[in-house]
Amino acid sequence: MSGPIHLSLSCGDYDINRGLIDGRVTPQGIDLTVLVYPTPPRQWRMDRHSEFDVCEFSMSSYLVAHDRQSAGQELVMEPVAAIPVFPHRRFRHSFIFVNSAAGIDSPGDLEGRKVGLRTWQATAGLWARGILQDEYGVDLHRITWYLSDDEAIPARVPATFEMRRIPDGASVTEMLLEGELDALIYPEMPAALLEGDGRIRRLFPDYKQQEIDYYRKTGCFPIMHTVVIRKAVLDEHPWVARNMLLAFRESKDLAFRRMRDPRSVSLAWLRELIDEQERILGPDPWAYNFPDNAAALKTMIRFSHEQGMISRRMEPEELFVPSSLGELPQYH
Image (cartoon, rainbow, N blue to C red; front, side, top):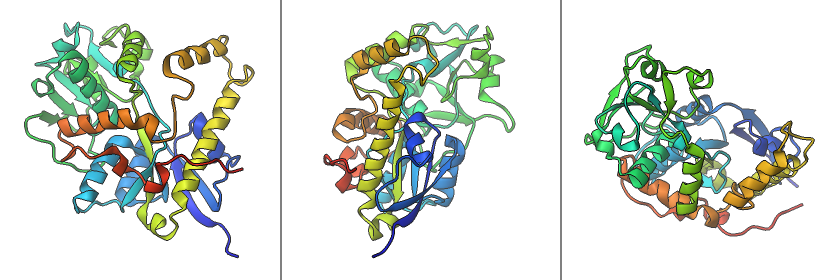
């Protein structure tokens, strides 16, 4: 009888991944080596070098990769397919920043301005731009976009969007603080904001309510990352998709059980925070299945197409390994 197969997984160090990281969760039939990296190096190592068998991966970049794969276009990365696991999600109204002296008081004031981004393809920017367009009527073509980094997966964006690269050695956050940029959409919180620098503020002071209202209107809790598996692995071992999906679910369930223990997290009102989240987002905001995420995926596909990154509005089902789409029983 053959033993387990050996696979590598790279993912972020999140509570919902920790069961896989520390070995409390073992995917059936798989001897898993887990390599923990933050997003930029993990993404780069996968889309430039295909270093991992299973990898937490930018959802926006995966849309681009799938679009190119399905059109028969070559990628540097080996072909991959996703399972409906979404270990990183985040509302993005709170990640749109403005220079305090720029005179930007509403989303419409962004038109005609200079706005910084890490990359056009970054999932945080995909969602923020789409929300600005959908919910506030912002014309994305009337903004000059300043990019700081190379795209994860090279993709041609229509010239109707005005894009420029910032100078070598420059920083979009510093350019915002110095008034060289008027606004910034960024995946992380700038240190200057956390330190109370008066030159930077959020576009939406009431960002939490804006995000709650957006969820109640659309049902979208923005997906940032999915999990991809090399097709070479799936061709040889098609059952890997199912077993990795079940293992990610088990790891997530472990994290939420632990979180409900008031001794596990040093917050005075932990139970109240969990209750608030469940009232607003439901009992499982991080659902690892296809049906509960179809609306958010359709929205992402539309945003990506409208923003020029993919050539067609694909059906969201085609993004995932077919055997991972149905309801799967847990194993013990």
